[in-house]
Length: 246
Image (cartoon, rainbow, N blue to C red; front, side, top):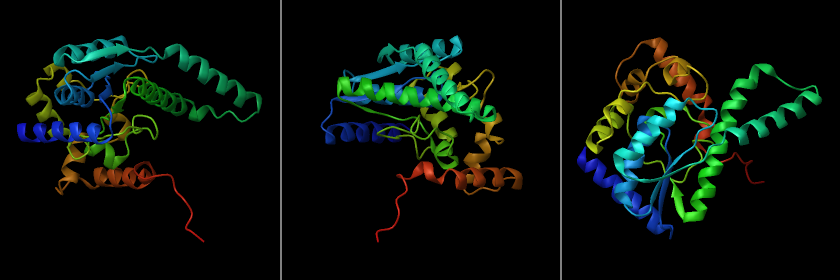
């Protein structure tokens, strides 16, 4: 695992240097994936790395957990609260849709959650431009394969260093890096609404996804859920679709 850490740190350094930029930043949520990335970029650029905490109608516990991650790796940090920005933007969009008679209440929760993710992405790029830093993503192999990320939200990044690591391997790397145990054992959640957890929303577990990615046998119910998610999310892993040349 130390060898994997060293390779990723070197790769991160090379990516920023090749782009002619000064360093790296990551949005720190208080979850294990962003914790691992925060530790990695701090090692890659000790003086030119940044962890950005982005509360947006968030549970205060998530912000506390994010601060513990910051403290554990000693990375520079800043907090940008997007709650008011989100409220103004989302209510303005809702008002326009309602006045047009086209408002779909059934899609409200998803639209709300995706806007939060995309506001965070826009904020990270604005901060990154200021510092001349690349934006580093936190998606692991399980999330990437199933499309469990918001297109142009948490999926809108420059680098995805964890994309070949299963959730189990991310946990192992977290321990190698010195991420606090309470962060490692925290139930995975995107924090998009009260009580939301990744596994409840997906309908399967990270353990099942990891096994499937490693070619191991899993129950047919879980296999179908995972493959359906992979198929439906194909567009998220590709550039914008273009028609064939005439």
